[in-house]
Length: 97
Image (cartoon, rainbow, N blue to C red; front, side):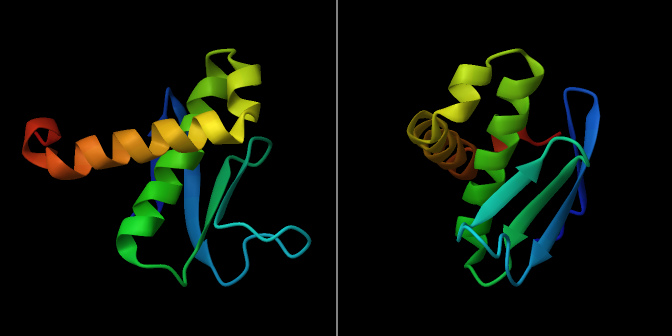
């Protein structure tokens, strides 16, 4: 992934690819709302990194718009992230400017 920063509803998050996202709880990605950081496991294929980034973006969006309960529901967040990643990946020209 080339992206180092992303603006999510006016909040800038740094995006970092790391060897280990979380030493105590294995995961592919993680968002820190206090430091505005998103960490992504760098040992994955690019399409999976993109999907994980979408997952973390959704956590940020739901948090910022006050949908805390939805943000805490990992299954729903993952389902929506998978669907949006697919739509944006297969229809990229529509969304590029």
